[in-house]
Length: 97
Image (tube, rainbow, N blue to C red; front, side, top):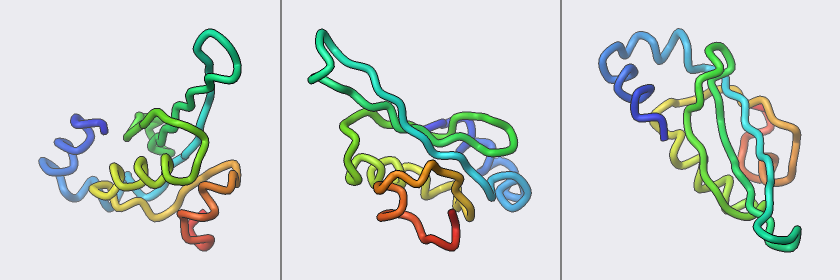
């Protein structure tokens, strides 16, 4: 989680309403030694500032995105922009994507 962004929210709570309404979520993969050992980086960035809000590493399963989503609770994000991967549709309100 981006501790600097959390500190900014605590120092200036009015920023929460103005800035952190929209976020972009995505994932990318790499591998270790061979492609059967895939590792996925899941991340969320502020749509306006492009600042990384939080990230996590794991497989390409819905529970890994759920872990990332829990890290985002302090930001109270209203709208997520995603690529409609199943993990997003299972864990985000369709009205907010």
